[in-house]
Structures are given as C-alpha cells and as structure tokens.
Length: 174
Image (tube, rainbow, N blue to C red; front, side, top):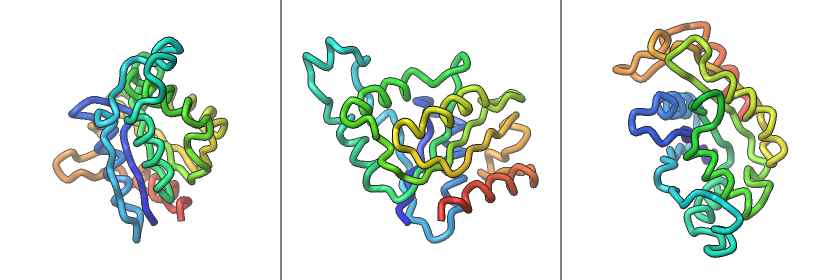
C-alpha cells in the first residue's frame, strides 16, 4: 500500500506532523511518503488570481500526489477553531482542478493540540466535509493534550487507550 501522510500545518515544529508521521509508521506493509505542505505554497486563492495565473503547478503536483496514493492520513492543526490558512489555501487551489480532489481514497483524519480539545472542532468540520470532495473517510480521531499523551523524544503515543483507538482507526485503511 502506498500511504501518503501529512499535517495540515505549515509549522516547522508541527505536532500534527509528528502525529501523522507516527500514525503512518503503524500501518503494516505500507510504503509511506510524508508530505510537507510548505512544498506546495501558492499565492492566496481568489477568482482574480485564478483568472490571471490559471492552475498553479504546485496545486497540480499536490493533486497528483493524492492520486498516486492508495490511502491518506491527514492530521489537522486548528487555528481559531478552523483550518490553518496554509492548508485551506492549498485545498482551495487544488479543488479548482477537481472538486473530487481526494479521488475516493480511503482516509484516516486526525487532529491534535496542546490543549484538552485536541483540535476536535477542525477535525469535526474536516470529517463532515471531506466526503463532498470524494474522501472515503474510514475513521477520525482527536488526540487531546498532545504533550501529555505523546513522547516527542520516542515519537510515540504514551496513552494506551489512545494508542488502541489510533490502531483501530488505522486498521480500517487495509
């Protein structure tokens, strides 16, 4: 299985990237590619910019990466209860290539934050909207209080209940 994983965050210290990378490592027999959405940075989307620029090569490349995967893991950072601006912009540009940008791929959607909410607000929004963009969402999971439940030195979840939930979610990809 070709598994694509990424954080919906542009932070170089993203805890969501740590979570996505760790989750992908738990999928047996997967060839994993970890994307950095910073590699797909584009001007802010607007109809005027699209009329002027057409579809940016970065959006085409991101769409192609999604299409080459057999399954996808995304871990969402939450900014003020919503998607990060970096992810939303990439999503907006890519959806102009094809509204079915997730191309019916099986997906596990994750989110985490330092606080007890675990970025659950953005995860709920992503889980609800993803099927409209041809995502086959198999499971979603919020990891609350990241630094209490994840050992950054060992790069692993330390809470056995959350680990069980994550493994159950990931098992649905195969």
